[in-house]
Length: 493
Image (cartoon, rainbow, N blue to C red; front, side, top):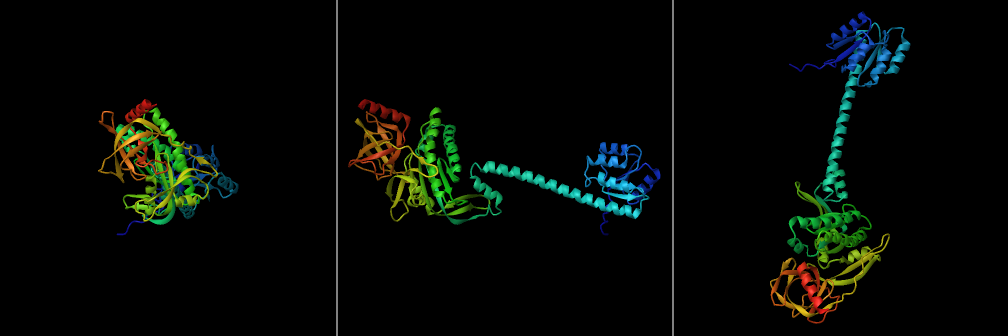
């Protein structure tokens, strides 16, 4: 057996309002023959009371001429609650009531029928207006569903932006949300400027603090740096501990990518004053940061799998940026020749260094930046010339050299013979190469090795040192060692 055809009159409820009993009964019977549920009302007040009490028919057949409230009055009041699409009203008029037809339509009626009502005409008009009402209801429901989905999407996107905005720049989040292929794996070659920053000696600092204190110090630093990076429209690719990797030129390229990276680096270094003032108030040690910047071609895009991916960069220029950063000491910004060229004559170059980064076949020149001029001038505070205070009682020390991140097996003997603000002049039969990272252990006046260690980097050679000696820039010195050295300097003064 086939499925029973659904009639448009199924489950339809019509309110018939007419003060003439014969007319009311005739129309009602015509409707009932079509299986339409009928509710009768003999006057306008009764019809309005029914609607006010929650009765909502699918359609109203409303006589125009009635004692008390007329059909025109009733129609006007109903229209204050329901639109013509929500509740269709067909006026019932006499043959000679042309003016009432006009008034009825103007008051909000959908249509009119003349008495006596023709059954075929009645059913045709009912079908038309019920169909329109049904379509209108479906459209309203669809619009409400769209609005609900829109609100849900806005809430979702707001959550995504708020959540992932803490890890990714707004540009990347917008790209993912607005571009259909935003999450597609793969990348493209692009010329970008890469900034890498790293705190000096933070691992040693973290080992002396409680875990929650370490995170408090680190988050204070990262909060400040992130605000500056986003100010200059940098894309944070990675935050690994205290190291930050930032891209300028992806996902969107601008002509001033390199210069914005330099400005960002300068402002980051200037902001370390605020970071350390807050650390000092909380009783935590001072932090220093080194920054390396490089410009070149990389592969940029979504890297990973369908389950887990990240927006990032890969390529030899990323590695070179890391190498350049590794040559820096606290408070220093070093840039590549490519970045210097991209910023033309706007840079203040303090000095240039010839280095041989691991993985390259020939040396390169890198530049220490002291400032940049242009629409906004940003300059670091000029460092005073190093003045070393000689020690009448030098410290006997033992030091070892790091190979990349690994500490070498060989210990070398030496003596700290003079000290400046954050540097030491050390004599030794073994002089480490410039830029070498070393660890130093002091011996007290009784020849006993102290348990605390000093970390730092051998000077690049710009500070003159006699044969058999080298300048050591301190990146981390425990407070107790600072006190011991301070007392020793006090003895010599």
